[in-house]
Length: 365
Ligand code: F6R
Image 1 (cartoon, helix red, strand yellow):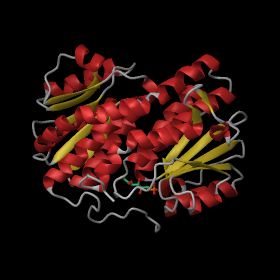
Image 2: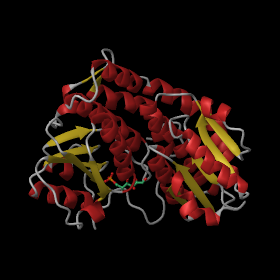
Image 3: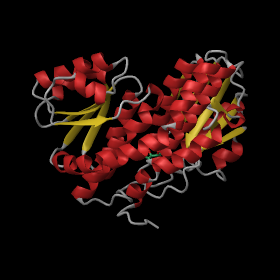
């Protein structure tokens, strides 16, 4: 049932504040601001490393998770798409654990990667939406994302709930490994606890602008997304979301890679969507944005209030989100990315919930 929404995808975008609070409350205490035992089902303390593997959007959630585990838990993360991971013949040792992320819990390549790690004697964690799935069954520890059924083929609420779980696990790991102290834990969990309220505010705040901007975006054949730090996987996710439902060719790049190739493509026919909250990477990303502007590129700037005040560059559009803590920025910045792809696809008249050639669950290699 789509309720009063035109598509399941739209319904699932709007459901995020609510399902986010289900996901979070399973792993963190939203009143006392501490991580719960559910986030510690893997013993992170003795680990020398963590391997993460997944496909598509779930892989991009894992890529953001890598930044968090390394930053908040000093835990080195090895990550790859499952179709490569399973064949890489990488050396693994039992002092590593492995995490697999899958909405359906049935993705063939992800399952094969899980079995590969299991054979190597690693402790296996599964971050899944479908708790009765094969991947959940074969894992030692199951971390449900509690997003509820996701019907739209393009993943939205599963992605942000996967991020909520990964952030909670990274905080739990940081605590277990003595990297973050009690005060830091409280501070980080307090930020997570604000997510449902902030996401609900943001989704309503930006909706009209995303709808009108989608009309402009639909006129282009190619779009480039740029980001740095955790905004880099978000740039990849933005490009994936746009291409799969609107069929507009889109690419995501690390902002610093611009001058190593894609800058050759910059002209007025390829808008560049720059994702840049006012974080420790902001100035660097803005200098990449200047390089785009200097070559006549059109910029769609996705930033926050501080970022908008700090940049004087002329843009095709500036999307201003509230200033939020660094650990929750990826979830908050997912919203404009999802809504822009959604409205562009609606405007172009594609089958938003069932894009051509795609399946919700990929059970063959
Ligand atoms: C993109 C999308 C896909 C899935 C991928 C993995 O919007 O939905 O990229 O994320 O096929 O699927 P799961 O998470 O079921 O393993």
